[in-house]
Image: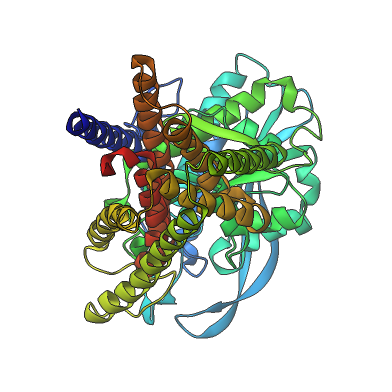
Length: 562
């Protein structure tokens, strides 16, 4: 009977991980390109991309960038419901890295608007200049063609202009949509800065800003940055078709010294969201950012996120007020399934965390009185799990340095995009870390830790990390509090509900499968995103979170060890 139970537990574990992997792959995959007249069509948007990214067009290539400006103007001028203007702002002085000289450049922003009846407006924004010659990773690189950065954004906006023009021809918009095609983002955020500080009267009535960027050329579109007090923004964002966002990423990005056209708007007190694709950084700001490497499915991902938000905003009176996106709280949020964004306020997050911590303390006290756990063994288990995390991180750091050395890549914690077979290395090392988690649990067993002791040690670790993150990086609390809650369910089965009846077996396997799937999806998405955003140099961070996932898998499926 015991052998049968063990095989059943292994089958549930393997089946649950397989389901989680399939769902994660679907979630991380770009949608099939569409060709429709009444919905966002990447096929139609591709025509705009071909027109704007056929030449390098940085602010230093005057003829080529003027050709892009003229194409944008001619395109929006063909739509009857669209009002537009090209505005020349004061010149700015920037450095030309190719000639190592300073030059004065013109700033030409193109503004367009489809007015609404309420006076409120959304601003959709992307920059049309491409990256010039730069020193990157210690070598000089010719400028990019701007196919992804920011051709995806420009093509997405022009396709949305078409769709909203057609809609406005039949139904007057409740709220207006404004479009800013900005200049000189790559050299000084020149266009966005001019709009906020020199042309701010055009922003009257704008209560939300959507900025489109790219840090790679393919993969899912991340909503990676928000303004502060984003609860209402996240509720609005959750209404899109393919939300893909994680509050821990938004929290981390706040602390990085990176800027986009969104930066002047944040400094100006605007509410808004920032979007970008992240894969692959090796194409970013290089000649490889061209039409040959552009991805039609990724372009469709832009549309599947942005167009539903634009249309929802344009037709709903709930977004007509100046305070429609003003809140006094931030949100905790994460994509759990394709099309499903879990989100709740930080106040609710604190309540969940405190209730989880209190429940954990009560269960442990009762279990100690029942002599179902040993406090000393539970603390020993806590120490082993903590060591497992730290060793995984240290080994990851050493492996990144070693592999960087033997492949000729200078080590950098956030910039090692040229390591051959980098994703393969990450998958192999992550799999090893997961397997080692089960060895840690077996080690607990050998030092006379009961399953309940092992669970309590891990629960204590996740609860403490949840509290620590609540103060330092609140957007990451979901990674700890939900596994900790699942652990308590598993602990309850071990201590208070011995599996004697059929319904208890059903509850046990249901909880085991559900917990494994949810935790695996949360960590798979995070681990993959960390790898994309930070590159191979951050292997220490990647393996640290992999170890957390491994610990959770072991605890949820602890019966395998019996």
